[in-house]
Image (cartoon, rainbow, N blue to C red):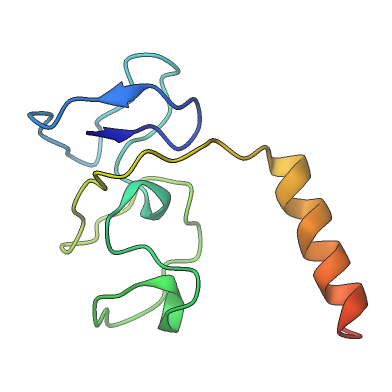
Length: 96
C-alpha cells in the first residue's frame, strides 16, 4: 500500500489514478512524480523509466504514461526542510 507524498495518508492499492485524482485526505494531486514507483532522485531526470523529457514540477499532476503508484510508504517532507537541505548541499559543494 502506498501513501500520499504530502500528508502520508494510505492510498488503497485498488485506487485508479488519473491526472485529476486527488488525495481523499489532503486534496493534493496523486498523479505526481513523488508518488510514482519509478521516481528515483539518483536516476537520470529522477526517473527509472526512459522518459522522453524531464518533468519540471515533480509535485504537480502530469500526463506521464509510465506513472505507477508507488507501493512504498513515504514520510512527508516539508518544503522548508527540502529547501534547507538543498541550500546546505549547494553551500557544501560551492554551488550557492
